[in-house]
Image (cartoon, rainbow, N blue to C red; front, side):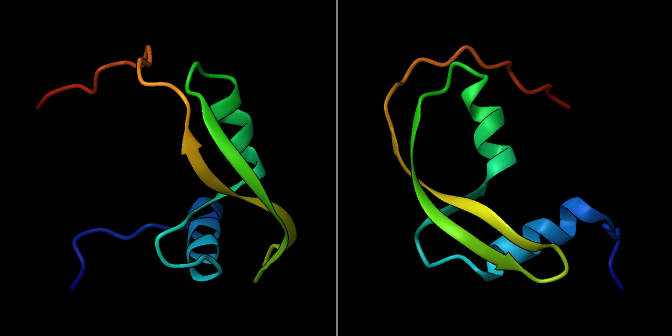
Length: 80
């Protein structure tokens, strides 16, 4: 019996992205690219093109191909 259950559009999208990806490649959606572009993280992307995601339709997706920087001003995760 699972100790927790996850539901919703985000979980479904993640599942569809994972199932339509390729081994050893990072498959990201357009909204993810938009968020990363608003941060100081510098990544290079390669447009994969239109990808059919079951239950969501066709969306533009990308491969994350490279990292161009090393020093990121990211918050430190909280410790428990």
